[in-house]
Length: 310
Length: 92
Image (cartoon, rainbow over all chains, first blue to last red):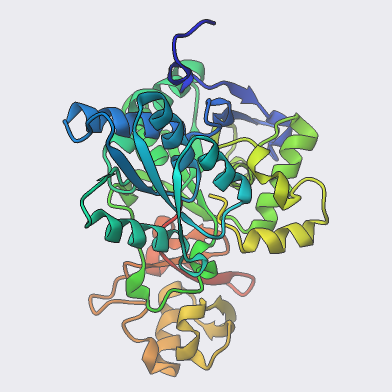
Protein backbone atom coordinates (compact mmCIF):
# COMPACT_ATOMS: atom_id res chain seq x y z
CA UNK A 1 0.00 0.00 0.00
CA UNK A 2 1.32 3.43 -0.93
CA UNK A 3 -0.44 6.72 -0.18
CA UNK A 4 0.37 10.43 -0.43
CA UNK A 5 -0.92 11.52 2.96
CA UNK A 6 -1.51 9.99 6.38
CA UNK A 7 -5.14 11.12 5.99
CA UNK A 8 -5.54 8.63 3.13
CA UNK A 9 -5.19 5.87 5.72
CA UNK A 10 -8.38 6.82 7.56
CA UNK A 11 -11.10 4.16 7.28
CA UNK A 12 -11.08 0.76 5.56
CA UNK A 13 -10.46 -0.92 8.89
CA UNK A 14 -10.26 -4.70 9.24
CA UNK A 15 -13.03 -7.01 10.43
CA UNK A 16 -11.61 -9.80 12.57
CA UNK A 17 -13.27 -12.96 13.86
CA UNK A 18 -13.41 -13.19 17.66
CA UNK A 19 -15.82 -16.13 17.67
CA UNK A 20 -14.19 -17.70 20.72
CA UNK A 21 -15.76 -14.91 22.79
CA UNK A 22 -19.29 -15.75 21.66
CA UNK A 23 -21.29 -17.39 24.46
CA UNK A 24 -23.46 -19.04 21.77
CA UNK A 25 -21.73 -21.56 19.47
CA UNK A 26 -24.26 -20.77 16.72
CA UNK A 27 -23.46 -17.05 16.73
CA UNK A 28 -20.34 -15.73 15.02
CA UNK A 29 -18.75 -12.58 16.38
CA UNK A 30 -16.65 -10.17 14.30
CA UNK A 31 -14.76 -7.16 15.64
CA UNK A 32 -14.15 -4.07 13.48
CA UNK A 33 -10.80 -2.74 14.67
CA UNK A 34 -10.99 1.04 14.53
CA UNK A 35 -7.74 1.31 16.47
CA UNK A 36 -5.97 0.76 13.15
CA UNK A 37 -6.86 4.29 12.01
CA UNK A 38 -3.77 6.56 11.95
CA UNK A 39 -4.88 8.65 14.95
CA UNK A 40 -5.72 5.43 16.73
CA UNK A 41 -9.51 5.56 16.88
CA UNK A 42 -12.83 5.54 15.02
CA UNK A 43 -12.97 9.30 15.55
CA UNK A 44 -10.42 9.94 12.77
CA UNK A 45 -13.32 9.31 10.40
CA UNK A 46 -15.56 12.05 11.77
CA UNK A 47 -12.65 14.43 12.36
CA UNK A 48 -11.77 14.35 8.66
CA UNK A 49 -15.44 14.42 7.59
CA UNK A 50 -16.34 17.40 9.78
CA UNK A 51 -13.29 19.40 8.64
CA UNK A 52 -13.96 18.64 4.96
CA UNK A 53 -17.65 19.54 5.37
CA UNK A 54 -16.72 22.87 7.00
CA UNK A 55 -14.22 23.54 4.19
CA UNK A 56 -16.88 22.75 1.61
CA UNK A 57 -19.33 25.13 3.27
CA UNK A 58 -16.70 27.89 3.38
CA UNK A 59 -16.74 27.94 7.20
CA UNK A 60 -13.01 27.21 7.42
CA UNK A 61 -10.20 29.24 5.88
CA UNK A 62 -6.46 28.41 5.95
CA UNK A 63 -4.96 29.32 9.32
CA UNK A 64 -8.31 29.28 11.15
CA UNK A 65 -8.66 27.84 14.63
CA UNK A 66 -10.99 24.90 15.24
CA UNK A 67 -12.64 24.42 18.64
CA UNK A 68 -14.09 21.13 19.90
CA UNK A 69 -15.27 19.54 23.15
CA UNK A 70 -13.95 15.99 23.32
CA UNK A 71 -13.19 13.34 25.88
CA UNK A 72 -10.15 12.59 23.76
CA UNK A 73 -10.51 10.58 20.60
CA UNK A 74 -12.29 13.19 18.49
CA UNK A 75 -9.77 15.74 19.69
CA UNK A 76 -6.85 13.49 18.74
CA UNK A 77 -8.37 12.80 15.31
CA UNK A 78 -8.90 16.52 14.74
CA UNK A 79 -5.37 17.30 15.94
CA UNK A 80 -3.98 14.92 13.33
CA UNK A 81 -6.17 16.37 10.56
CA UNK A 82 -5.36 19.95 11.62
CA UNK A 83 -1.61 19.26 11.61
CA UNK A 84 -1.77 17.97 8.05
CA UNK A 85 -4.15 20.65 6.78
CA UNK A 86 -2.62 23.58 8.65
CA UNK A 87 -5.38 24.60 11.06
CA UNK A 88 -4.94 25.47 14.70
CA UNK A 89 -6.96 23.50 17.25
CA UNK A 90 -8.34 24.03 20.74
CA UNK A 91 -9.77 20.97 22.48
CA UNK A 92 -11.90 21.26 25.61
CA UNK A 93 -10.97 18.09 27.49
CA UNK A 94 -12.51 16.88 30.77
CA UNK A 95 -9.84 16.63 33.49
CA UNK A 96 -10.68 12.96 34.16
CA UNK A 97 -9.39 11.30 31.01
CA UNK A 98 -6.30 9.12 30.76
CA UNK A 99 -3.03 11.09 30.55
CA UNK A 100 -2.21 9.46 27.22
CA UNK A 101 -5.12 11.32 25.61
CA UNK A 102 -3.72 14.66 26.72
CA UNK A 103 -0.22 13.66 25.58
CA UNK A 104 -1.40 12.69 22.11
CA UNK A 105 -3.22 16.01 21.73
CA UNK A 106 -0.01 17.82 22.64
CA UNK A 107 2.07 15.70 20.25
CA UNK A 108 -0.14 16.89 17.38
CA UNK A 109 0.06 20.50 18.58
CA UNK A 110 -3.45 21.03 19.95
CA UNK A 111 -4.11 23.50 22.74
CA UNK A 112 -5.81 21.65 25.62
CA UNK A 113 -8.39 23.57 27.66
CA UNK A 114 -9.47 21.62 30.75
CA UNK A 115 -13.10 21.30 31.87
CA UNK A 116 -14.15 20.16 35.37
CA UNK A 117 -14.05 16.41 35.99
CA UNK A 118 -17.24 16.60 38.06
CA UNK A 119 -19.22 17.70 35.00
CA UNK A 120 -18.03 14.92 32.68
CA UNK A 121 -18.53 15.46 28.95
CA UNK A 122 -21.46 17.80 29.72
CA UNK A 123 -18.86 20.20 31.16
CA UNK A 124 -16.65 20.06 28.07
CA UNK A 125 -19.66 20.93 25.90
CA UNK A 126 -20.65 23.79 28.20
CA UNK A 127 -17.13 25.30 28.20
CA UNK A 128 -16.80 24.93 24.41
CA UNK A 129 -20.14 26.64 23.83
CA UNK A 130 -19.06 29.53 26.06
CA UNK A 131 -15.75 29.88 24.21
CA UNK A 132 -17.58 29.73 20.89
CA UNK A 133 -19.33 33.00 21.74
CA UNK A 134 -15.97 34.79 21.51
CA UNK A 135 -16.22 34.15 17.78
CA UNK A 136 -12.51 33.67 16.99
CA UNK A 137 -12.74 29.95 16.28
CA UNK A 138 -14.88 27.46 14.39
CA UNK A 139 -16.86 25.02 16.58
CA UNK A 140 -17.38 21.74 14.71
CA UNK A 141 -19.58 20.26 17.50
CA UNK A 142 -19.55 16.51 16.90
CA UNK A 143 -22.75 16.03 18.95
CA UNK A 144 -24.83 18.03 16.49
CA UNK A 145 -22.83 17.92 13.26
CA UNK A 146 -24.52 15.89 10.47
CA UNK A 147 -21.07 15.15 9.00
CA UNK A 148 -20.50 12.86 12.00
CA UNK A 149 -23.18 10.23 11.23
CA UNK A 150 -22.63 10.87 7.51
CA UNK A 151 -18.99 9.71 7.81
CA UNK A 152 -20.31 6.38 9.06
CA UNK A 153 -23.08 6.23 6.47
CA UNK A 154 -20.50 6.80 3.72
CA UNK A 155 -17.62 4.79 5.21
CA UNK A 156 -18.09 2.46 8.16
CA UNK A 157 -21.50 1.13 7.08
CA UNK A 158 -20.52 0.22 3.49
CA UNK A 159 -17.28 -1.36 4.74
CA UNK A 160 -19.23 -3.64 7.10
CA UNK A 161 -21.74 -4.53 4.38
CA UNK A 162 -18.95 -5.35 1.92
CA UNK A 163 -17.08 -7.56 4.40
CA UNK A 164 -20.08 -9.15 6.11
CA UNK A 165 -23.43 -8.94 4.25
CA UNK A 166 -24.76 -11.71 6.50
CA UNK A 167 -24.67 -9.37 9.52
CA UNK A 168 -27.72 -9.80 11.79
CA UNK A 169 -26.77 -7.36 14.53
CA UNK A 170 -24.43 -4.38 14.83
CA UNK A 171 -23.19 -3.36 18.28
CA UNK A 172 -21.35 -0.12 19.07
CA UNK A 173 -20.85 2.38 21.86
CA UNK A 174 -23.24 5.28 22.29
CA UNK A 175 -21.24 8.46 22.76
CA UNK A 176 -22.31 11.13 20.31
CA UNK A 177 -24.40 8.36 18.68
CA UNK A 178 -22.79 9.15 15.29
CA UNK A 179 -21.50 5.62 14.69
CA UNK A 180 -24.85 3.98 15.50
CA UNK A 181 -26.90 6.53 13.54
CA UNK A 182 -24.77 6.37 10.37
CA UNK A 183 -24.04 2.64 10.31
CA UNK A 184 -27.59 1.88 11.49
CA UNK A 185 -29.16 3.87 8.67
CA UNK A 186 -26.91 2.26 6.05
CA UNK A 187 -27.40 -1.32 7.22
CA UNK A 188 -31.16 -0.97 7.73
CA UNK A 189 -31.49 0.40 4.18
CA UNK A 190 -29.77 -2.76 2.92
CA UNK A 191 -31.56 -5.13 5.30
CA UNK A 192 -34.31 -3.74 7.57
CA UNK A 193 -34.04 -6.81 9.82
CA UNK A 194 -30.53 -5.89 11.04
CA UNK A 195 -30.61 -5.14 14.76
CA UNK A 196 -28.83 -1.97 15.89
CA UNK A 197 -27.64 -2.23 19.48
CA UNK A 198 -26.14 0.54 21.63
CA UNK A 199 -23.84 0.06 24.59
CA UNK A 200 -22.91 2.75 27.10
CA UNK A 201 -21.27 3.12 30.50
CA UNK A 202 -23.42 4.37 33.42
CA UNK A 203 -22.04 7.87 32.90
CA UNK A 204 -25.02 9.61 34.48
CA UNK A 205 -24.34 7.74 37.73
CA UNK A 206 -20.75 8.86 37.72
CA UNK A 207 -21.15 12.54 36.87
CA UNK A 208 -21.15 14.04 40.36
CA UNK A 209 -21.55 17.66 39.33
CA UNK A 210 -25.05 17.30 37.88
CA UNK A 211 -27.38 19.61 39.80
CA UNK A 212 -30.72 18.64 38.28
CA UNK A 213 -32.06 16.19 35.76
CA UNK A 214 -32.80 19.09 33.48
CA UNK A 215 -29.05 19.62 33.07
CA UNK A 216 -29.04 16.30 31.23
CA UNK A 217 -27.98 16.05 27.62
CA UNK A 218 -29.09 14.19 24.51
CA UNK A 219 -26.99 14.73 21.35
CA UNK A 220 -29.00 16.53 18.65
CA UNK A 221 -27.94 13.92 16.07
CA UNK A 222 -29.40 11.07 18.19
CA UNK A 223 -32.62 9.48 16.92
CA UNK A 224 -33.75 6.85 19.47
CA UNK A 225 -35.87 5.16 16.78
CA UNK A 226 -32.72 3.97 15.00
CA UNK A 227 -31.88 1.62 17.88
CA UNK A 228 -33.42 -1.75 18.64
CA UNK A 229 -31.81 -2.17 22.03
CA UNK A 230 -29.64 -0.25 24.43
CA UNK A 231 -27.51 -1.79 27.18
CA UNK A 232 -25.66 -0.33 30.10
CA UNK A 233 -22.27 -1.94 30.69
CA UNK A 234 -20.58 -1.28 34.02
CA UNK A 235 -16.84 -0.62 34.44
CA UNK A 236 -16.14 -4.10 35.84
CA UNK A 237 -17.59 -5.86 32.79
CA UNK A 238 -15.71 -3.45 30.50
CA UNK A 239 -12.38 -4.28 32.12
CA UNK A 240 -13.07 -8.03 32.15
CA UNK A 241 -14.01 -8.13 28.45
CA UNK A 242 -11.09 -5.88 27.50
CA UNK A 243 -8.82 -8.48 29.12
CA UNK A 244 -10.57 -11.38 27.42
CA UNK A 245 -10.06 -9.69 24.03
CA UNK A 246 -6.31 -9.58 24.64
CA UNK A 247 -5.97 -12.95 26.38
CA UNK A 248 -8.22 -15.08 24.18
CA UNK A 249 -8.06 -13.31 20.81
CA UNK A 250 -4.82 -11.32 20.84
CA UNK A 251 -6.82 -8.13 20.27
CA UNK A 252 -5.37 -5.22 22.26
CA UNK A 253 -8.26 -2.77 22.48
CA UNK A 254 -9.43 0.06 24.74
CA UNK A 255 -11.88 -0.11 27.65
CA UNK A 256 -14.93 0.92 25.63
CA UNK A 257 -14.18 -1.99 23.29
CA UNK A 258 -14.56 -4.31 26.25
CA UNK A 259 -17.94 -2.73 26.94
CA UNK A 260 -19.00 -3.24 23.32
CA UNK A 261 -17.98 -6.91 23.46
CA UNK A 262 -19.91 -7.37 26.71
CA UNK A 263 -22.97 -6.00 24.92
CA UNK A 264 -22.36 -8.20 21.87
CA UNK A 265 -22.21 -11.25 24.13
CA UNK A 266 -25.62 -10.38 25.60
CA UNK A 267 -27.04 -10.08 22.07
CA UNK A 268 -25.44 -13.41 21.09
CA UNK A 269 -26.99 -15.16 24.09
CA UNK A 270 -30.45 -13.93 23.13
CA UNK A 271 -30.12 -15.01 19.45
CA UNK A 272 -30.74 -18.48 18.10
CA UNK A 273 -28.03 -18.24 15.46
CA UNK A 274 -26.42 -15.60 13.28
CA UNK A 275 -23.62 -13.08 12.90
CA UNK A 276 -22.77 -10.04 14.99
CA UNK A 277 -20.44 -7.17 14.08
CA UNK A 278 -19.05 -5.23 17.06
CA UNK A 279 -17.21 -1.96 16.51
CA UNK A 280 -14.11 -1.57 18.69
CA UNK A 281 -13.45 2.18 18.87
CA UNK A 282 -9.75 2.22 19.74
CA UNK A 283 -6.65 0.25 20.70
CA UNK A 284 -5.36 -0.32 24.21
CA UNK A 285 -2.35 1.98 24.02
CA UNK A 286 -4.03 5.00 25.58
CA UNK A 287 -5.11 2.96 28.61
CA UNK A 288 -1.79 1.40 29.67
CA UNK A 289 -1.64 3.86 32.57
CA UNK A 290 -4.91 2.47 33.95
CA UNK A 291 -3.25 -0.90 34.56
CA UNK A 292 -6.24 -2.51 32.86
CA UNK A 293 -4.33 -5.65 31.81
CA UNK A 294 -1.78 -5.93 34.58
CA UNK A 295 -3.24 -4.90 37.93
CA UNK A 296 -5.88 -6.35 40.24
CA UNK A 297 -9.32 -6.11 38.57
CA UNK A 298 -10.97 -4.35 41.52
CA UNK A 299 -8.22 -1.70 41.65
CA UNK A 300 -8.57 -1.08 37.91
CA UNK A 301 -12.36 -0.90 38.14
CA UNK A 302 -12.17 1.76 40.85
CA UNK A 303 -9.83 3.76 38.62
CA UNK A 304 -12.11 3.27 35.60
CA UNK A 305 -15.10 4.56 37.58
CA UNK A 306 -13.45 7.97 37.82
CA UNK A 307 -12.34 8.01 34.20
CA UNK A 308 -14.15 8.90 30.99
CA UNK A 309 -13.19 6.07 28.68
CA UNK A 310 -15.94 6.24 26.04
CA UNK B 1 -46.60 -8.33 44.93
CA UNK B 2 -42.89 -8.82 45.14
CA UNK B 3 -40.35 -6.19 46.17
CA UNK B 4 -37.92 -5.07 43.45
CA UNK B 5 -34.65 -3.24 44.04
CA UNK B 6 -34.50 0.25 42.51
CA UNK B 7 -31.14 2.06 42.32
CA UNK B 8 -31.37 5.81 42.61
CA UNK B 9 -28.78 8.18 41.10
CA UNK B 10 -26.96 10.74 43.27
CA UNK B 11 -29.09 13.54 41.93
CA UNK B 12 -32.40 12.01 43.09
CA UNK B 13 -31.17 10.76 46.48
CA UNK B 14 -32.16 13.93 48.37
CA UNK B 15 -35.77 13.15 47.38
CA UNK B 16 -35.69 9.64 48.84
CA UNK B 17 -34.01 10.19 52.21
CA UNK B 18 -30.46 10.03 50.89
CA UNK B 19 -30.33 6.32 50.06
CA UNK B 20 -28.72 4.86 46.93
CA UNK B 21 -31.06 1.92 46.66
CA UNK B 22 -34.57 1.09 47.85
CA UNK B 23 -37.26 -1.46 47.21
CA UNK B 24 -40.65 -0.88 45.64
CA UNK B 25 -43.54 -3.13 44.78
CA UNK B 26 -45.19 -3.61 41.42
CA UNK B 27 -45.45 -5.89 38.44
CA UNK B 28 -44.25 -3.25 35.95
CA UNK B 29 -41.78 -0.36 35.96
CA UNK B 30 -44.74 2.03 35.88
CA UNK B 31 -46.25 0.45 39.00
CA UNK B 32 -42.91 0.64 40.81
CA UNK B 33 -42.60 4.33 39.97
CA UNK B 34 -46.21 5.08 41.01
CA UNK B 35 -45.45 3.48 44.36
CA UNK B 36 -42.24 5.48 44.75
CA UNK B 37 -43.94 8.78 43.93
CA UNK B 38 -46.68 7.98 46.48
CA UNK B 39 -44.01 7.41 49.14
CA UNK B 40 -41.73 10.28 48.09
CA UNK B 41 -43.93 13.07 46.67
CA UNK B 42 -40.85 15.15 45.70
CA UNK B 43 -40.13 12.58 42.99
CA UNK B 44 -43.27 13.71 41.17
CA UNK B 45 -42.27 15.10 37.77
CA UNK B 46 -38.71 13.79 38.16
CA UNK B 47 -39.34 10.34 36.72
CA UNK B 48 -42.61 10.64 34.83
CA UNK B 49 -43.97 13.70 33.06
CA UNK B 50 -47.51 15.02 33.49
CA UNK B 51 -48.32 13.27 30.21
CA UNK B 52 -47.38 9.95 31.82
CA UNK B 53 -44.17 9.45 29.81
CA UNK B 54 -40.67 8.85 31.08
CA UNK B 55 -38.78 12.10 31.75
CA UNK B 56 -36.70 12.97 28.68
CA UNK B 57 -33.41 13.10 30.60
CA UNK B 58 -33.97 9.85 32.53
CA UNK B 59 -32.91 6.44 31.30
CA UNK B 60 -34.28 3.42 33.14
CA UNK B 61 -32.71 0.00 32.90
CA UNK B 62 -34.18 -3.35 33.94
CA UNK B 63 -30.92 -5.05 34.84
CA UNK B 64 -28.79 -3.87 31.87
CA UNK B 65 -31.57 -3.28 29.37
CA UNK B 66 -33.04 0.17 28.53
CA UNK B 67 -36.81 -0.12 29.09
CA UNK B 68 -37.51 2.25 26.17
CA UNK B 69 -36.65 -0.74 23.94
CA UNK B 70 -38.54 -3.29 26.05
CA UNK B 71 -42.06 -2.28 27.04
CA UNK B 72 -41.39 1.26 28.31
CA UNK B 73 -43.35 1.80 31.54
CA UNK B 74 -45.27 -1.42 30.90
CA UNK B 75 -42.02 -3.44 31.09
CA UNK B 76 -42.63 -6.30 33.53
CA UNK B 77 -40.36 -6.77 36.54
CA UNK B 78 -39.84 -9.63 38.95
CA UNK B 79 -38.12 -10.05 42.29
CA UNK B 80 -34.75 -10.99 40.83
CA UNK B 81 -34.59 -7.82 38.71
CA UNK B 82 -32.69 -4.66 39.59
CA UNK B 83 -34.02 -1.41 38.18
CA UNK B 84 -31.49 1.42 37.68
CA UNK B 85 -32.45 5.04 37.12
CA UNK B 86 -29.64 6.88 35.32
CA UNK B 87 -29.63 10.53 34.18
CA UNK B 88 -28.99 11.12 30.47
CA UNK B 89 -25.68 12.97 30.11
CA UNK B 90 -23.26 13.53 27.26
CA UNK B 91 -21.01 10.63 26.37
CA UNK B 92 -18.00 10.44 24.08
